[in-house]
Image 1 (cartoon, rainbow, N blue to C red):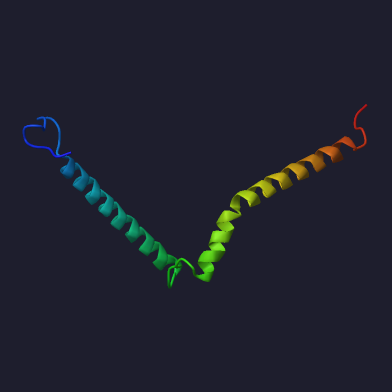
Image 2 (image 1 turned 180 degrees about the vertical axis):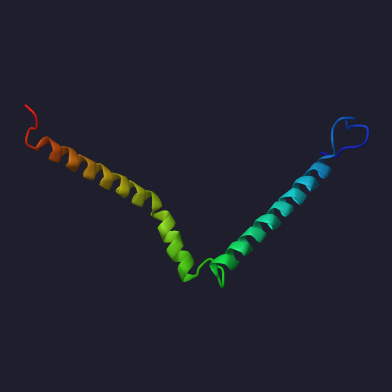
Length: 97
């Protein structure tokens, strides 16, 4: 929609100005985050970043895709161990009277 000075209300900001401000804020945020990433890479001694298609990238992708499955397995293992303890307690000799 093309706006002219006659169609714009007094209280409404120019859409272009709003979008430009949003874009500038996004760029500033990106730069700030990039600085944090670079600091972390220095602290951890990261020589090069993983690139899509590299061996380490593919290994990480596999781990992430199996994450939900692994969490379910861990939960199931915990439930089994808890049940085994309950069954062991029931078979203990009676204490007290």
